Amino acid sequence: MRVAIIGMGTAGVSILRQLEAHSYFSELDIDVYDDPQNMGQGVPFQNDSAQLLINLPSKDMSLNAHDASEFFNWYETQNQFKFDNATYLPRFVFGHYMKSYLEKFNQQYSNIHLITEKATEMYLEQGYEENARIQYFVCTNHQQEACRQYDYVFLTVGTMAYHDPYHLKGLKGYIPSPYPTYETLNEVDSTDDIAIIGTGLSSLDVIRYVVKHHPNLPITATSRHGELPSVRGNMIDITLRHITKENFESILRSHFGVVPLESMIRLFKQECEDYNIPLQELINRKVGDPIKDLKYDLAHPEILGVFQSILETIKENMNWIWNSLSLQDQEVFMKKYMPILKANSNPMPPRTARLLIEEISAGHVVIKKDLADVQYKNETYIFKYHNQVEPDYFNVVINATGPKTQLKDLDDDDAFIIDIANRQIVQPHPMGGIQIVPETNQVISPRHGTLPHLIAIGQITNGINQARNGVNMIVRQSVQAVKSLYDFHEQIR
Ligand SMILES: Cc1cc2nc3c(=O)[nH]c(=O)nc-3n(C[C@H](O)[C@H](O)[C@H](O)COP(=O)(O)OP(=O)(O)OC[C@H]3O[C@@H](n4cnc5c(N)ncnc54)[C@H](O)[C@@H]3O)c2cc1C
Image (cartoon, rainbow, N blue to C red):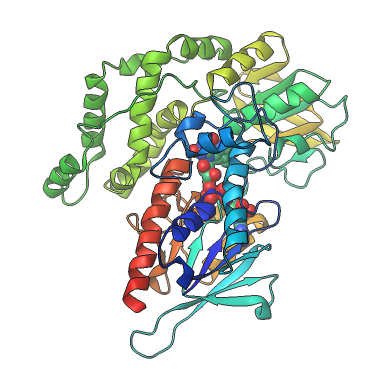
């Protein structure tokens, strides 16, 4: 069976690992696609500053669904990278751990082929005879002769390009993406005034690099709300007792096949009550002063850790939770509850929080809220705020607003996704990304219906997999997807 994996970051490598673990592996012929730089490492875990840390303790994040400490054990046994504090290792180390598997497999097996180019087009062919199987053609370089034929395709292309909310792309001094952070200052003069748009996790990444390497401080990080992510507390194992499949099934039966949002929120509150979480206090704890907010989180690691653990466990189960809601309730959830979920999940390591407090206190970093607009005039960026009469002026702007989620917002940077949407292989999901079957990750095409052998995993599925694209969740989806591939292989061999 001919298999393609398009995109060799976390999801792609994870799929390959699952494929390799099976006794029929040698009966597959596998092409993997990515550019030479990202092949095996992906974007979040590419080579970058050692200050950028993974957001889970090193012992809790791995590509092995049965052994969360596999990455840490790999780190301990290799000699290339050593750090004094290995509790949260740099992200690029995780990238090398992933890549080590790709390199090992590539040397060991002749049925894996690395194609160090990005896919540019994909199209389908289906014969007219009964039960004709769809064949997938993946092309590179816009050349028809560079198209290869497959029975099974994994679409694991990662995040879409970054938002550009103020339409600044292409202007001098505008850096459209913060990664790799160590390249953000390549074209920047030492006297330039720098602003970062966004105050989320990628903003923190770039703040830490710029503050260490740029002499003209302070740097300003700004957004509409000006809120920093929360700080990781002491996480615990959680078993959900109220948000369970059984409870959801019983609600579905009595509510015409959906779980009303208020029922879900009631069950969530019961989960929190079981752990004595002061819910109102925690969700309203931010006072708008970044130092006070960071210190609060650092001072309450126990209760925050439990709260974050509940949210993390919910995220792990988000496929059936999210897809039990009606579309209308999903929209309400996005407006009312998603900001709370986001603000309290994917927290920063405590070490990063302490460093930020130091830099803000020293006057090296300014966090500003109420950003209203950014304009470009006379080679200067003018930042206007709702709460400030005079604008701020900067020469350089680093965009850390996060990746786009809706297909309608894409531009040439995501030409491949636009291409497959244009060929009606994929279609937008109203909540973002593309339509897939939640349980199996099979793509739902507007032209061909459900495509059982075209599997999408990762950020491109964000409408269905809301908040469910961390490493461990991707690995779980990969296990399931590869099981389906071998079930099919078993039928046809
Ligand atoms: C900055 C950042 C930090 C994160 N940190 C963590 C963390 O610490 N822990 C955690 O659990 N999660 C983290 N995440 C969440 C993260 O999204 C996932 O963990 C994971 O890396 C995503 O895997 P992926 O395979 O979907 O994307 P990626 O790992 O980015 O892989 C996608 C790959 O597809 C390639 N590609 C794109 N288009 C094409 C094409 N047309 N043809 C061929 N190849 C293509 C890209 O080059 C890339 O290599 C982080 C996310 C970001 C953005």
